[in-house]
Image (cartoon, rainbow, N blue to C red; front, side, top):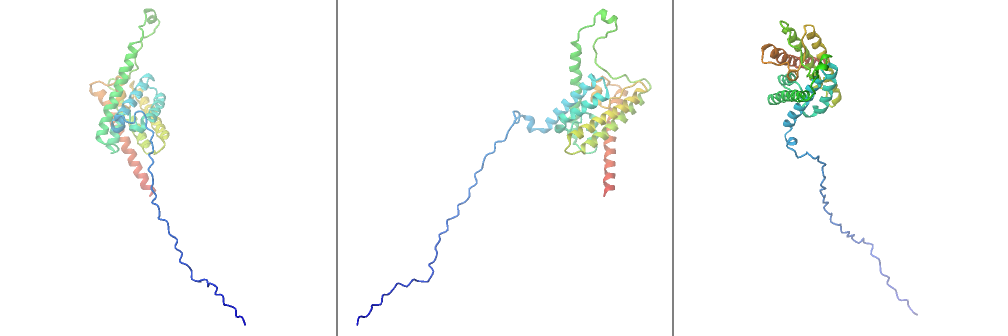
Length: 279
């Protein structure tokens, strides 16, 4: 009887083969530095860009030059000066703060808003700017044609620069206190404008309206006795009001400086009181 041969089938191994999945080595992510080309202006490498203090002095010179020229050519009209100073603050305010007035710079120095070196530099630049405006305007007046005899007979006068009225005799104290009052108003307004952060237009309008109110009040008071109010020692030089005499120096330099300091101090006192009341 034939017997069937047992066929041995291969038995599959149930043991799981070790999965050897070779992990790929992590590639180090190399970040390539991309050179960003910064746009530079034509004068970005100028010495003024590396010396902001010198740039601020130049800005004060230019700003005071423009202000003095506007006062002389505008014949001291407060409304003209208001718009002029607002525009100048927008032009140079970000460079120097646009003090444009030695009384303002000294007021800022006394209240520790600027350093002594900056205040001294500002005052010098302001006087030089006003002097340059006077010299340039005089050059233009000198180039005006002469008035003929016939024109003079009809009352036509030769071209001349606008000047401040002479100090009235025995009334100098009135002009002194008019300058003191006007500079106090202006100093308070500028100190308020320095507290406005980020809004250049609001700061410019605050200073512009401040000079308008200051001149409106001071000039009206001084006009009662036949005098003029300038409220700016540098511009007084352009208006040919300064002389090496006691009263012109006292009325047009000392009084505005004292008023500017009072305005800054008064603003700081009221601000401290207001902050204390809000706590």
